[in-house]
Length: 387
Image 1: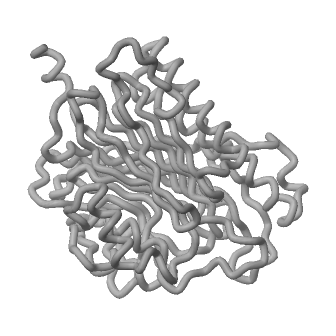
Image 2: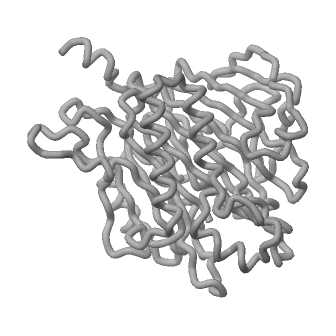
């Protein structure tokens, strides 16, 4: 069962976002890449070739191209400029660890002239939707499915993954887009249960933080504004920091599972320690991935039946490989972890750790790292220095 955890509590990072995608390991998925923004298109038709052998182009829903070479990685920007560096050595212990770092690809978008989307996407359904994504103008979103009753048919006629695509391709404001998507889908008719976290990364000098985000769902009767007014104009009003760290999983957002509070506590603890000890970004990222890898219980998962593990998924942030009863895939669990950081200068860092893409448990994890400057970002450092 997936989880999203996000916070705007860190003074150096207006947004820190963590995501675990729990899914069948054999479900065909394209790893994160830049694609050109094309309204009303699917990821497959919008995909662009970055211009090198390390990028995969999607043609008619099929992946073409060369996979990353284990000894080298490519450092290049969205326009195709490439340099090569050595990758990290992989030990036998790292091979099976959720914290392994065998392959890294860094994209530096220093000259984005057009709107680009950065996201992974599903190849199982023809819509080629996604659960997480950002665009070069600062739109960012995460979708989590709602867990329907155990034996219910949880599939939907219209892919839930098309909702993030609609938002990332839109020029509408956060509130305008909610009205638009509700009208277009007849209030999400024929779409399976979901919760959707989304917003525009824009700095507001009055509240000294990013503009509020929204959460909408077709399993709740109301939408929710989050990250509101970090700094009150009235110094006598105590800000409720609890509301500045949020989490979503596969329940209604007003009926959170135990893993929600665990995830929020873990992220808040990492943020507090990173501030106190003045961590650099690498140390912060390592600790964030550790938070995404917390198991409850910490062991004995291999002895659980699928039904027992399924019930335990309300408790645990990380789901180890669980043997399923499905003909579709032998294993289910956390297969992709994502950390997104946005700093005060508007640089967005997107790190994707793909743990599994097949039922072969000896598969090496892959890490892709992307960096780019958000278009039209108001530099917080410049504002602070001018005051």
